[in-house]
Length: 88
Image (cartoon, rainbow, N blue to C red):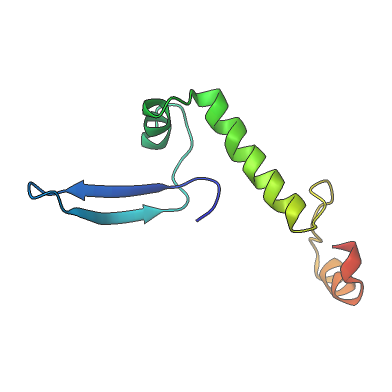
């Protein structure tokens, strides 16, 4: 899981922690549990959204992919990209 997600945990009376669910594509809106958890940690909603975007852009930059270039969409474009991988 990268950039953002939600992990639902439950704590027993004995202090044991159980992972209930890992949700890698939880919704990102102001009233969501993810935003509420971020707020509890001191991140307001605009800062949270900006941080998710910053992490995604940085990961793409580190991977060597140009975030300004769109991926090939059609069959012909995909075939040409395989022949010329530097254009992808």
